[in-house]
Image (cartoon, rainbow, N blue to C red; front, side):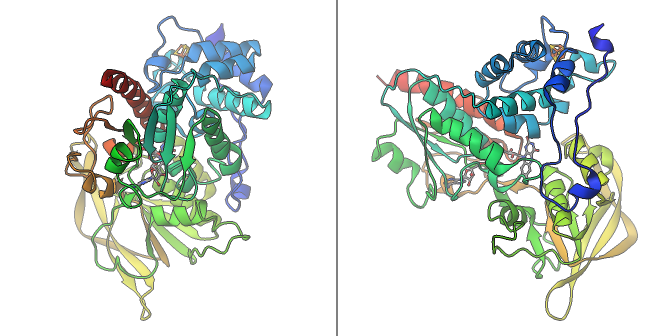
Length: 462
Ligand SMILES: Cc1cc2nc3c(=O)[nH]c(=O)nc-3n(C[C@H](O)[C@H](O)[C@H](O)COP(=O)(O)OP(=O)(O)OC[C@H]3O[C@@H](n4cnc5c(N)ncnc54)[C@H](O)[C@@H]3O)c2cc1C
Ligand code: SF4
């Protein structure tokens, strides 16, 4: 019986060892392990895993090919729907998507769809297999703003349809959060991110870095003067939030975004680079999402003793279960039901400690999670040198403010329908710029949906 085989565990770097290096935590499956795990799939006729995948990867079909040892064929099936399989296999929250809807999960362990996707993508890369099939060029220009997962997915599908696509990226390296946010030990940059971005380039997509849309060029310039027939905005949500508590301006208080950008994009963790990064001896990270886990685990690897301060309980932590598990294994301390109320500094203006208040859970809020309620008079101090704020991000308002008629909501998110159409004809948007901070695969799904709509829009212009 197929479903009697236990889920094949994946090999990982020893927690003690990895807590002081930036090498990848997970080693992934080898051929035999992947084929054995693939043999657990029931090949359902009406598979829940596919319905739960925002880019509709044909899961049972690719898993069947893995089981047969036809790894290149499996890669081709995934490539039809995803331009970033080695990325998604590593960072997608499969537990709440494909694997969360796998029939085997009802009574036991779901098929390890994410690890199999990663295996297939890594194997194809090692074997030098690429999928660059596209329709003949139609010479029609489309601009994409931002080279994160939303922009890359939109550009990929448009290029496959024959469009002449240029991505404009403000940073010096493309990839968005994949490049500047998610650390090397979860997502290797050279081997995985750059390789998959180059595969998008192989489809003919041009990427122009160091172009700040809204400053260097506006969306209207692109449409009216540069000859682009449509613009897709996938500019993400990179503006960090702060708490507004006393002491937040002290030296040593930093946003997770800045901290991670220094380490990942500017390679501060690498002794060969001279980018400064300060962790001191003790670091507190405020927040409980993937970003908080990444900041905490990065600070740990840079030599600090790290605590996470989170105002709800472990059950409500928004980070992926795997990330929380890895953080704990590596020795990060969790202060649950706690919230900072003030940060104290020394005479030179550097952080000395953070004062926290204990919380308890009250009624559910709008998100459905029980809201934290302060417990009167219950305070404690944590002595720390650095406080990393990881409280979420929102979109930068620059593009909207320089694009007349482009509607946004009160959170600065661009208002777009499920196909990415905005209040401006010819301007489409998707990913975190529309939803606020979300996930890689949702951003990719929105980029793909917008590509379809852009094609229809351009065809309707004639
Ligand atoms: C540290 C961290 C860890 C995360 N971990 C996970 C995870 O494990 N799993 C998961 O699914 N999701 C994770 N996420 C969320 C996920 O990465 C995002 O939801 C996703 O990257 C959004 O994609 P996007 O393309 O919309 O935006 P982004 O990835 O933010 O890309 C937007 C791009 O647009 C560029 N840009 C912005 N403004 C301009 C402009 N004016 N002109 C030109 N370019 C511009 C930016 O520089 C950036 O490169 C994480 C996020 C962070 C920050
Ligand atoms: S739901 Fe699970 S068992 Fe069924 S096809 Fe998908 S991965 Fe296979």
